[in-house]
Image 1: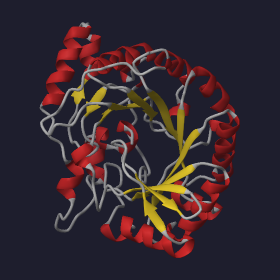
Image 2: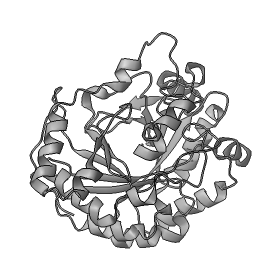
Image 3: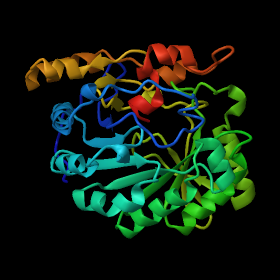
Image 4: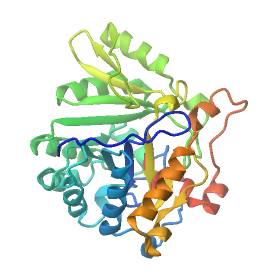
Length: 346
């Protein structure tokens, strides 16, 4: 892939459309507390899920508005059959500077080499604990070793830019920050600690369970010494830091210090709903527009009209909310499953 000069379409707050999170499935093989804590979920009808050809066509239109980074998400993207086919299709787009994937790593050991060969450039693996019992508590599955094997396989396949994402929950895994940082350093990858977010699907969220950026840095400072902030070079959500031995790590503080002012991300669900904010209650149904036979020009006009009207600041608006609670309770999720994090991608 080579970068190509693309126009930058600003929204009402001057933020360009540059990053697209593309969910390829709403299914997942884990049931993590912070994303899918309920016993049952309403799954997307298979007939509504976009084909790879439809996804490719929509990405091509998004590219015309300035998108040059695509991240494949879910659910768990590796559950989608032959996802390497989609990777190969997207990797052929010369305008994309970056093609990445976020995965829980359980199926990665068998697929890392094929993903790399197909053109995937970056992988982020969710890893919230190194303790088997805590993994079972968080994810309701016994798959820690498979996740670790997936990380090893990604390294062996030649992925050079691997990141780990750790959602930190008070009283669950906040005592493991040092150990997780040491593990990341030992395998040559960078870890990012994420504040537990009150997004759709996080029905068990409460302010007391959030471990703030300040507390994360304090804990790491106690265990690993002086921490130096690194200058920001892009609009990525993570604030990056360096330890005295040169180890880098990140913190994503969406709850206590949201970064809405620089957010250039949009999310497309597996069934073609386009959301301009992770906290948005409503999206734009691109699937129906696409399947009605709209031309690329008509799709482009719709995307442009939605983005230039965008003024979302969902995370900022929730800061300081009195008696702050989860974005949606289980009843609201049953009524509108598109609110769920595992449907719209992270």
